[in-house]
Length: 445
Ligand code: UDX
Image 1: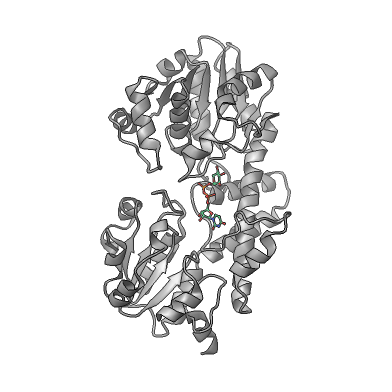
Image 2: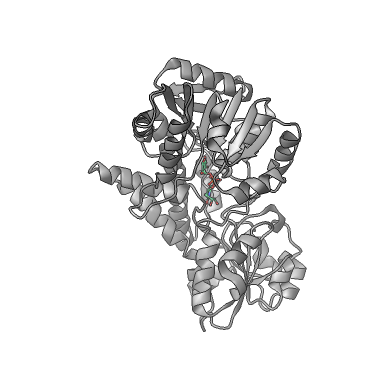
């Protein structure tokens, strides 16, 4: 099929590339000329495992092209995907200006009937409103459908190629048939293609993210409670997870969720509820718990260093909001860094992929280290803010030698508290208190 994808962010670029990889003829369109120029030369604007190779191969083979010319790009396309950003607006809801602008351009360029599919996460009613607005600019018939994207950063290619389900929101069954044809190669036999109204499809995406974020805030609140009562949240998680109604997924306590989706989507849902005069008590609580959880590491540091953090050197491993991405949007590590800078601490940071993005934000306020051990030199403590795999099995002897004092604040429960205490570390986890650990000592003080 001939496909146009508008917007070359995470969703658009992965969508376009994976559709090209399955034999379609895809043009990815973006108004940012520098981005398109870079992509034409094989420069991928984001770090996503496996993506660069796929872009290079499909560009070389001519199935994937890049353009800034929307009108020319969509001229031959049977399906036009809209994957532009919908960032948080000042009112807390989603800023849809990108969607409206692209819709207008599409409508003005239409020369024959087309299917326009919204991939961006959009508030319920956007599909209908886009169709209404486009109809003002054209007399040519068109369809607007919704096809929410559920992929996770860091596993985007895998998620796209093996979706748990595909959801499409359509007004006409023929549009669902066209989309089914496109997605059939990716659907394993036991995975459904779910057809519903655009409103339900739009809602599905928000409800999925709300529930996932709720699970995280829930386990974080329980972890803090475990810690206060000397229970181990890991054991508790094992204790509840075997109950089939509960399960293990997405119940890892940590330093709060970040990224480009959960924080903004939860606030968009709160805004959607308020716009209809409905309460959004649970989502408000989920957001509030998450904001507080992002402060947890700093509180632990502040109560450990009784003489204050001014002049202390703190090493931070992990800056991205999660492993296998260079994305630092709403990353908990940044909340910690801001607080430590206010305290007057020196900060030495390491991340396998996100250093360049953090340098753009903080310039020379931080010391950037290419290697994890480099960050530890003369540091008074190590903080782990992102659970990259390369942090899981470090040489603890080297760590003890490099650190000025062997104190570890483990925001992702990467290490075992008892083992760390045995190795001679003062150790703080999330929701885990081992005898002899830092948290235990603080409690007794
Ligand atoms: C999320 C959704 O999973 C995805 O379906 C949607 O399309 C976009 O938003 P993403 O933001 O890429 O994807 O990352 P995800 O793996 O879901 O993690 C989000 C945040 O939650 C991260 O900061 C992660 O560290 C945190 N998290 C996740 C936890 O703290 N505990 C968990 O158990 C799971």
